[in-house]
Length: 127
Image 1 (tube, rainbow, N blue to C red):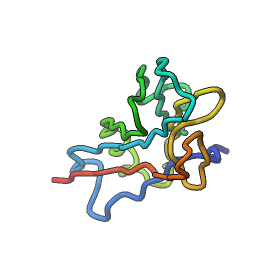
Image 2 (cartoon, rainbow, N blue to C red):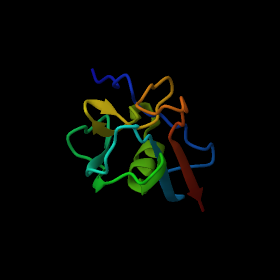
Image 3 (cartoon, helix red, strand yellow):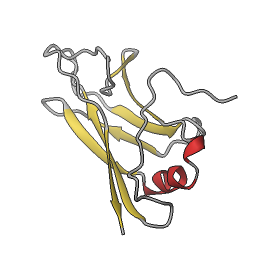
Image 4 (cartoon, helix red, strand yellow):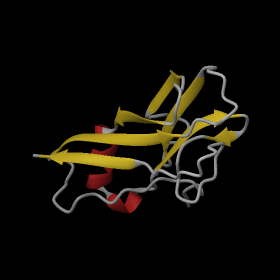
């Protein structure tokens, strides 16, 4: 039986959403900038917890001067969730820096000195 990792991101689908009327689904991920970060390249990876070895999004990034939001199109994944929400095991997002995930999750403590916590957001447009 499949189980979601501890730091999974789950999104309820809007009640009117179904696999046919979802036109666009954008995922916004908040990435913390640790105090000691010196601008080296990092990798943002977002995977479905059903297929963790097949990323939905995998891109080299660098964080600018402050923590920031990254957005990505996950329309196909959202349409799959709407088709069969009983098999929605959520997403996992990672930006690893010295074994620390910089992605904002609820109850996540990161290298940010401000103590801020931002969680990921899904915006779905339906027809």
